Length: 272
Image (cartoon, rainbow, N blue to C red):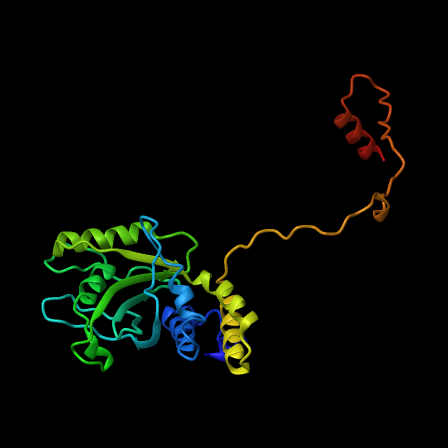
């Protein structure tokens, strides 16, 4: 956790504070020190597809393997460097791969083109994800991969459907493969952390949750939770009203009916 960020020691004008790499390392780095059921898995469950399908995790996830910014370069596949690659190991020994592409202020780094291989960032990551196997995490090559999922994380409150659909379309056009991309927002995290803090009794884990929440709050990454209901009643006697007497402005008499008011004022001013 970059504690300096929480206390504003990294200037708002400093580009490093706006980089998604720093935010990703702070948040997903801290999640490594918490049980997966506390923060990571509830966050992943908030993801939805373009069609509105919920991302469902296989029960029994007991261990999480994580790689930050791995360079994926497989023969016959597009190369890419996703932000986080997660290997969720269940109690049956199967691995469920979750690739995280995280954005903060920036957008998609590469768009589709007319080349042979996918160039759209999400399409390239989907393409590479198909080739990932257990050894990338130091596991046996025979490790069974139960599922492969790409989750796009942004700071927006609404799904960036155009980016997702463009990535899916290019993968279909270049690889003739169908796929699915799930999306969620950084703003889903605060409520998850608040809920976890109410049940966490370990002081160390509670401190991690507290720091994560403070960081996200500083960056304004929270959902609008509505207006609080007014619980106090007010009586008219609680207010003071001020009233002034009515006043009228009296226009001066114009001795010469042929003069306009402007001409009269000029004449009086000129003659003293």
